[in-house]
Length: 443
Image 1 (cartoon, rainbow, N blue to C red):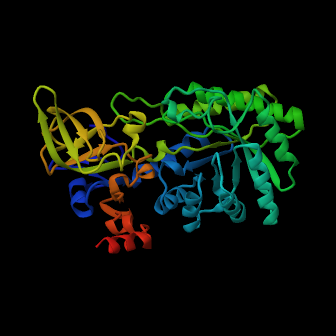
Image 2: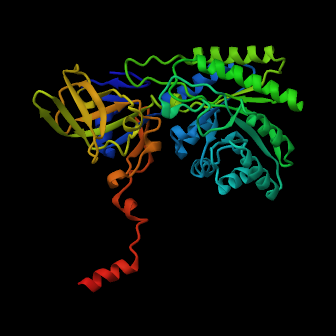
């Protein structure tokens, strides 16, 4: 069993998180249920700040909202002193709804709608990260309409292929994000940003991928980006003040995963930035980071109720739970692996190897193969490390309502996202009058 944050096994053999019995949480709030360990989220925020602030003069850590964003999550990261990275109208509106300090919000997106740009500009977000040349014009036009100047960064493709799943590599040349270096597009972007009257170019941004363990790619990204900053200075005379190296640090999903420590990450990145600045004769820039998964991933656990245990002689045992693809698409998308425990039998050792399946009309395999305690219908299965890209990627496939999200700490459990109902699923459906008329005519 993996151990994260405040997870324990109580005297009854039940898994507890934040001093809350997960079996009781499942009974009280229903299943599937996302459970978030508030203490661990806060601790991860603080460890990021400590690791980097002790090694670098000026650092901004911005939580990457795409991993998991709700109003409550916004309040937590704000109170811990982090900035916020958003990449859609909905994420920005979520932050604004709880009065997150707008100067600490950074707006991303490879294709920003006009209404997203307008809201980012009119609300005064700290920075808009421009992803292409035409977008610079659109941001400047919006700023002109609102009588302001927008602070922008240029997103660059650093040409680095991270060692992670191909779907979450974002720094190599053949991907949709940012402006290229070899063809001079990134430099053209910097020059155009300086020319436009309602833009202030403050820095450059890159992101090499997600769920990364090999830190060499961060080191290489820092080298490439500082070289580009020197190129900008040579071409324009402007010394850019900020360097954003994105996020991407991996977490532990299984016992085989060995992610680097935050101190190791900070040593590599801070050392590379300081060395690169000295090499190119640049002032040490303000360093910006965008962790998401490594803040909330291990703090999340999903609870399911076992419904069916099916033994196929000579082949395998299937354990079917009451969720699956709609609340966790990652196994289908990335062949993601997870570990789990029978929450009401957590004190027992694993005895049987099974496949954990969801109940959607697909293969819908949550865990390909895992050794679990003896499993029976009615048991509660706790799947670990589901805090990132589970709720945020959940869907209504097969017309499943999305689960509730509960925040736990010190024996208290609070709903931060209500469970969807059948009424929620139906509320936007409309039946055209001609279809109703056709039925009446047929009868």
